[in-house]
Amino acid sequence: MLRFTVALLIACTLQVWPVPASAEMRQFANIVYELPKGWRAGGKSDGRLELRHDDDHCRNCRILLDPGVEGGGPVAAWRDAMATPGKDMKVLGSPQLHHETIGDWPVEVMLRQVEDDGRGKLQAFFAIDLPARNELIVFEGSARDEETFNRSLAALNNDVAPILNGLQFVSEGAEPVLGPPEAGSLEGPWFGTAIRNQYNGLSGTLDLVIDKRLMAFYADGRFFRGIPPSGAGPLDFEGLVAAGETGLGNYVVTGKEIELRFVDGDVSRMRMLNDSTIASGHVDIHPATFPPDGFRFAGVIRSASYTAFGPGIAGGVGSESTQVFRSDGTFTDSSFTGAFGSFDTGGGFTATTGQPERSGHYDVAGGLIILIPPEGEPRVAWIILEDVNSVIIGGQPVSATDDE
Image (cartoon, rainbow, N blue to C red):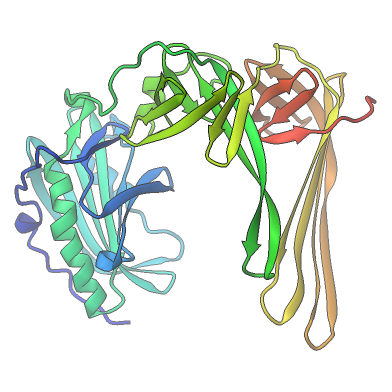
């Protein structure tokens, strides 16, 4: 691949860019920032919020916002640790290191080119030294040739620089994007499923897919998308936000409309169809309950998946797992994986592996179920009741079975 010397004018990269009064301000963990025009906040990558561009302006560029850390030590050493190359990554040449200041905050900058799984990339790490915290902004763009390198470089200067110069921090007195909640009329978990057809590009077939929705509402006006780590316990709102959780916020009920105001500044809406049904996209959700501590039940969870092979090979890879729960507080767990199929030439093959059946006991407390094997670490999942006879564990329904 072609290699280019990273020759950036850092002073130019970090020049002062005013933040327009109408800027769309967003938040991730401790960072309050301006969302650059044309960029959108998407999912997460290794716990970092990922910003992507909507068009070909910089198709393979991304900006990563790290949740940061309290008392992270010397910021340059922390930056280097956070920038440790992955297993398939090779650093090309020597990184360019630089010290800058953004506003009142010292910043340690690292610029480098890497080859990641055969693809050339330009990376920039901006480690910000706050009085009691370290924060990190990462830019990554394609550098497979001169054209993509220059495009990534332009995005770094034109899009990342305004973010850096407009950064605010909640720990340093910035107002959170989300305001305080107002007491609400919803409370507890709400759950629902819907079945739809989804095209499988590998097999050319329509597969049945089950969509699931789970929301936890709180009487103080907060919500969590799913069930929080605390289960049925109080919601640690500030702690979750500081850790980089974005699937929570405030809800407001106006007539039949429920507005979800997320902590990062995003907004979505649901509709209350009646007192026991909320329309959430293509899925209707209904009130559920947390089981009491010490809850016992009998049932089985069976799950299976199938992935088809590509052209020229008929068949695929299938896996199955079975968990059996008993009302005496014990469970068994087994799994199976198999590959099977045939080539266009007619030759067939099979390959299977199995996991020995494991057993242990389970405890239910605070809306969580803890699976405790004889050896190894316990596993934890949320547990709810759709009704007194319908148990859902981690999104999987428990089918009734004869108690043993």
